[in-house]
Image (cartoon, rainbow, N blue to C red; front, side, top):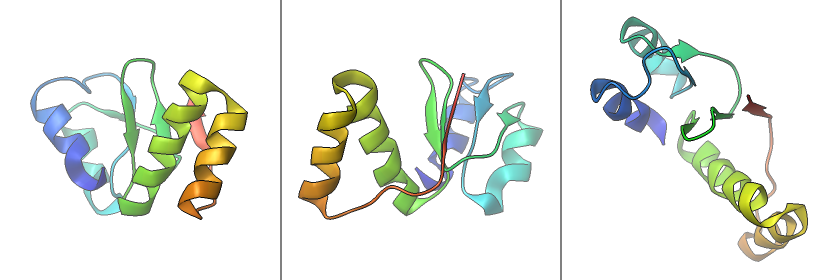
Length: 91
């Protein structure tokens, strides 16, 4: 979450991969070889990143949807009293 993607980048995990981070650090992520794309959540298969604190909640709910289905994700939104916004940029 937030600039945590830069930790993944420092480990070489985002090189050439579709990813995102907090808008303030996008240039740093690009400079480290990440293929920055738009979206609050970017799903590149086994690498899923997000842009900021609240988009981290979006990321969590996206993973619930990806692994357990849309109905379960909607239930998670209801329990958390949170509505996702924006897009998930997928492969």
